[in-house]
Every structure is written in C-alpha cells, then in structure tokens.
Image 1 (cartoon, rainbow, N blue to C red):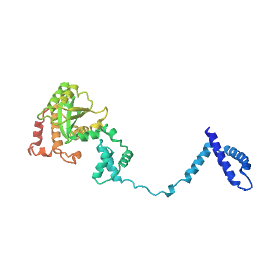
Image 2 (image 1 turned 90 degrees about the horizontal axis):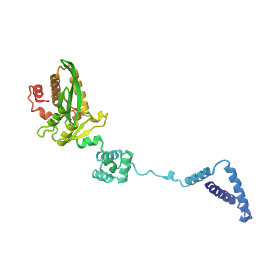
Image 3 (image 1 turned 180 degrees about the vertical axis):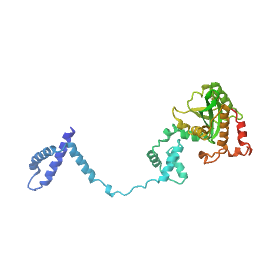
Image 4 (image 1 turned 120 degrees about the horizontal axis):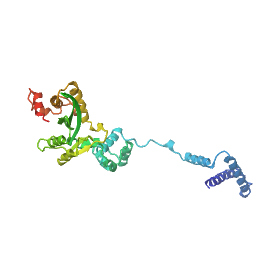
Amino acid sequence: MSSNICSRRIAFFVSTSVANECDSPTNSAAYWRPRQNNLAEKLLQQVATIVTPETLMAWHRKLIAQKYDGSSFRTPGRRRTAEEIADLVARMAKESSSWGYRRIQGALANLGHALAYNTIANILKRNGIEPAPERSRKTSWKEFLSRHWDQIVASDFFTVEVWTPNGLQRCVVLFFMELSTRRVEIGGIARRAHGLWMSQIARNLSDEVDGFFKGKRYLIHDRDPLYTAEFLTMLAEAGIQSVRLPPRSPNLNAYAEPFVRTIKESCLERMILFGEEALRKAVADFIVHYHFERNHQGLENQLNRTESRKRLPAQGLWSVASESVAY
C-alpha cells in the first residue's frame, strides 16, 4: 500500500513538472491532461527499474532537509562548563550520596558558582553517577570506612612456625587494628585456637574499663570459622557490630593484611623462634616498634602514638612494653 502511495505521489510530481514545461498559450489544460498522465506513468516505469519507491522517497526527504538546513549559519552555542566546576560537581555527588541536583546547586552557589540543575544532571550523567535516590540506597566500602573511620576495628589471623621439643609447631596469632590510628592489639597467641580461647579474647576486648573495643562500633573480619557465633554474640552484646567480608576478598581488609606482611618481613621471618615464649616476646617488641618508632604512610608519614611515647621511660623501653603486654 505504501509503495502505491509513493508511486502516485511521484507520478503527481512528474506530471506537474511536464505541465510546467508545456506552457504554450495555444494549448489548453484539457488537451494536455491525458498526455501528461501517460508521460508520467512512462517515466515512473523507467525509474522503477533502477530504484525502489523507498529510495525515491528518501531522496525526496533529503532534498527537503537540505533546503531548510541552516547549520552553515549557526553560531557557537553556550560555552561548556569549566572542567574544575564539573569535577567539583562530581566530587560533591560522590562524597554526599544523598545530595540531589538542587542540593548540589545550592552548595555551588555558596562557593560563587551559578549552575542550572539541568547542567548538574548532565554532568553527573557524563560521569556515570546515578541520581540521588539510587545513590542513597547503595554504600560502597570507601564510603562506609570514611563515615565510621574512628569506630572501626579490623581483625585477622596469621600463623608462625616455631621450634619445640617435638619439632616444628604452628602458632596462631590473632590481632586487632584501630583503623584511625593504626594502633594494633594482639588478641592472643596459641598453638590450638578454639571457641573457648576466642570467648576469653572477646571478654578482654569488650571490657568496659580498658577494653580495646571501648568506643568502637564495627569489627571488620573475614569468614574464618574461628570467629565463632559465641564470639560475635559477646561482641554484639557489647555494642560491636560484625562486618563480614565477602568470600575471597582480602583487598577489602586493606589495613590488616599489610600489617601481616610488615610483621613477618620485618621481624618474624628474620628469626628462628624456639618455643612459644620467644614468639610472644618477638611480637611484643615489634608492636612497640610499630607504635612508637615506625612512620606510617597512611598517617602522613608520622608516628601513630607520639603522645604515648612520652609516658614511657627513656631506658628499658622494650622490656617495659614487653612486660606490659599480656596474652
């Protein structure tokens, strides 16, 4: 049906053009009308053997578009938003997931930047940032850590081989790290780790007077079965929420894992340890060094407990610290 309509339209155009050419005053319209129609049909039949009606209509539409095309007369439009401002918009949206277009518009106005909310929406779209309702429902690990930085403790296990009268014996070391200060607490060292051992560690850590978890709310840990249900229940009763990492994701515990490498490469792998007591003393001495003598890149290359170091005597630093650490 559409082909017939196109053919009739083309026939009409062809017949009209023939009529315009035959403009002799002696010839009447009634005389030329049958011949015009016959000529138009012949021309259409000749053209139909070369192209299809769809092609003819496409050419026709293209010619019309070219007739009214004014792109050559266009002037440059509004200048693009400066990259610095666009980066600032994207940063506001990423760091404040609940902020919508209007909220970001107001914050930019406070800084002296006037942007329409549609412009802000386009900037976020170019950067692949979802609108505020979708962003507010999702929380990345980076956002979670930044919001609760001072209330998070990370934990992990590592093992060390020591020599005993019965040969090599594997010892398990459990430690906890305060992310905001990089302060490390050795929870315990044992040859055989079990549920009762973990329960006692939970009591020590959650002590209301001087427990390591005082003022904390979250414990990041992997899915090791040693984090027993009783251990996590005791911490929950003390107000500590367990945050389990997804399976096979050591990079998400990016502060505890480097400590394992540090203590092994800097201390434990450089020594041959005879007995569990030698391991305890080596770990205690390294913790003192880690706190008071080692600079941390994550803390702007500063010591993490410079104020506490003033309370320790100038002599006997290692022995005092070793005696004060009990497992």
